[in-house]
Length: 306
Ligand code: RUB
Image (cartoon, rainbow, N blue to C red):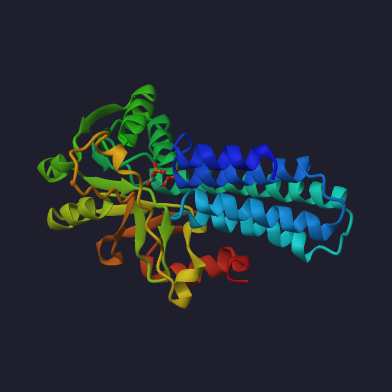
């Protein structure tokens, strides 16, 4: 195993790279580097190396179907190719990755185009954690000349909400930070809730940063629209066949470095928001109902089901 994949997996595990999209991009680039550094002489050996790299990256964060879909896409291109020469296969990986990353850029813009239409001047938008997709959409709305406010939650225990808050301020957006448990307190002033996604299941439920489902409950009780802003590639095809999306549980030290002896601490990184609380998923195909997820993914990315 070369260094690039181990390093990338370590950075992903430590949250140096965070957010499903950035994780997928880092993983794909690591696979490309790994392929370039490979000393394999034959296709079989090359594929074995790639498969080992894939397993290491998959294990770096459990709740990341976007990364898994991205890696599978690249691996599939190599597996189905008739090419036997390793050098040609390396070039194939580079061109497939490049094309994949370009498509990602395009879908991010498509999502921002659609989502920013739902951001109106003088509205208050609440978001949870840090989603690069949500952030991009809000910045787009600001560039379009809309003046709105954003409320960010801290997103304990590792405070990704501060990343969002800084990005919003840098974009010139009026921003307020609250502790996670103040969500219900402010909800009556909020016009719209927008959150990202790490995974979308076949039933249209959405998995995102821990606390998202509580934000959704508060939004529902206050009758505030709740939207998920997400690429369709966060859909996990395995959920169709009965698999549950695994929820990553992280070290207790993120919550309390040196807790008293005997204390049990749990630190789940994500939770599940039921589709009934989601007004719509704003994705590259438009604003869709969570119920139609399989159909829409099948239309746009049929290879996911292979
Ligand atoms: C980040 C998080 C984000 C989604 C979507 O959690 O829950 O909302 O990953 O992000 P963590 P993006 O910080 O634990 O990775 O829109 O950038 O894909």
